[in-house]
Figure 1 (cartoon, rainbow, N blue to C red):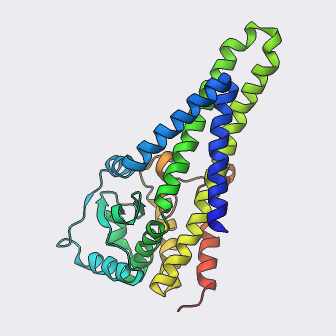
Figure 2: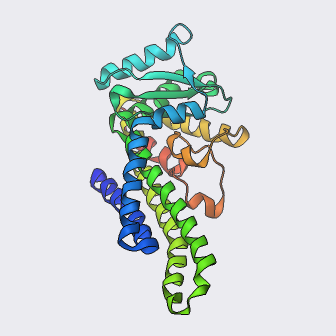
Figure 3: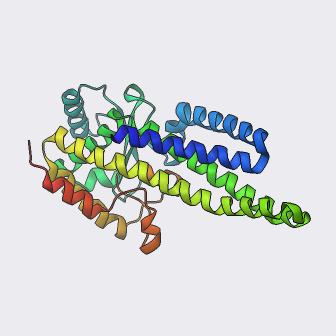
Length: 280
């Protein structure tokens, strides 16, 4: 059911993207939007991992530097029967982590320097298991495609809004179409954000559940999430909104209305779900 929901939501994102193209340029605009979506998804499929690692200046974490972490990851991979991912570290004090890569054989788990120093072993193991579950479920690819489509929708909507402002007043007979274009330019990004949020939140719950089963210790991840949230408020991570969905907890601070559009579920709900699970 979760996979069907995700595919349906991705289809909805694609539909919005094509609708904007059609509104802006008719059949030709829809065709251009379709080609653009294909190119962007091709680039995100093959190069998104390299792009995000470079953005955070993440370098390879050697086994000689962190034998404890390598032993932890190797044990989890053997239990899950998946290839060992590459391990990277990015030099930020704020504790956080993300996974990237198009499939389990090309996966990378990136840890901030802060998380390697501030988490105890059960907490760090829970975080790594969470990211490994994202890899196993291929969430890294799904979320990259969703983010790419959502970003493209927002860009097209921005362009359409300016088109309506500058060219809408020249033809009264076309005023209805222009108003429709402007309405679409405002509502489409909102819809895209909500869909991306729904996809990301669904996958976060699944990754939490998978991590708890993999470690047989729901409390380890629950404790880690509480600690990560507390640290993120006092020690914000330098992150971009475009990549915020990749992290185990949102690196962006937001209250009231902004929190409604967060790509992450409420920490309180995630922790409650984990603590409701019985250790295996």
